[in-house]
Length: 152
Image (cartoon, rainbow, N blue to C red):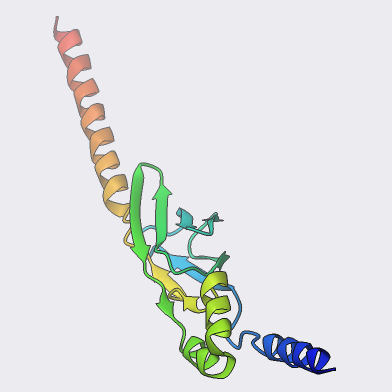
């Protein structure tokens, strides 16, 4: 009889340790203000996620690890990273749910969050300007070559 009461109480205790944080995934928006329309790859220890065109939004798995954000457009390519932080609700879950609730949140990533908006430093303006400059130089050299060929 005592054994069934103890098992029932333990079951209720463990069941009530459910997380009060906001889940183990998160929506993140990436913008490249100096290179609109770029593509980005986001990577953390729990997965790899893609944005086809910036600004864009993707759902990622939360983690305590760094979030690497690699964006590219044409020849322009840049990598940055964002750190995760512990959500305030995780501390409340430790108080309410105890060590088990906190442990579950840490293990599933629910205790962490990344910035909701990541402004990436990719700048393709300079790349396209230097490409235009190179094209202008090539055109000018072709003109000079044609002039030299006419003279000979």
